[in-house]
Image (cartoon, rainbow, N blue to C red; front, side, top):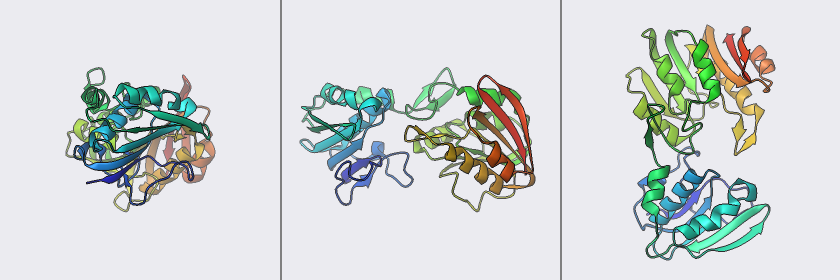
Length: 302
């Protein structure tokens, strides 16, 4: 039994978090998987709701499934990041909702109905699914979940056949990794992502004994990832919906630490992001291999 569920990491003072709450956000390492918890097993849920419609409804539906009948749920979000639509979403599941607003957020309080409506449909729509257009498993909420990100597509256009031991940092569902593994000269590939959903999908998609998929923070040193021949990445630059240029810089530093001298990093980034300084400090040689369509592609040699 989960007791109290907590989804997300609310800012201090934003909501009262009961002691002993069980974290169930896939973006927080070590959290439990909400989808694996038993029906009607939890006493309360506190949900910092994601902004995307399919992802939000999936989380709310899973929480309502896991809650006992009559158990309270508090769901909240910034007004301009889905908060204004929370009340209607909960009402669609059959909840009677009380709503208030403070600190730029909308807060919705409800009790789990005895017989919620539409949970199975919302869980199916927001759960893991095979995307025929990608030929890959993906899930709403994962980065670029229903299409190949344009930056990754640009990188794939010029990425050479790689060889040896490598890593894909921020691997997502495995778009870049699948292309990398097409080279028979790649001996191993560590695929790292902070999103548990992406990791689960990548494990489906990368049916290759050379691939090792890790649920981890790529910025944190992993002693198993050293003396690599190559690193490939399309680093994130948003944290909690806000742009954070330091994320990409941290990925660059992590990539450099993983490579042996002479090892190579291939990096794609939006052209407005100022990564040149970080690259110059971490690598002996940096070459801009492409600069078009709003993206830069760097080859950096340690």
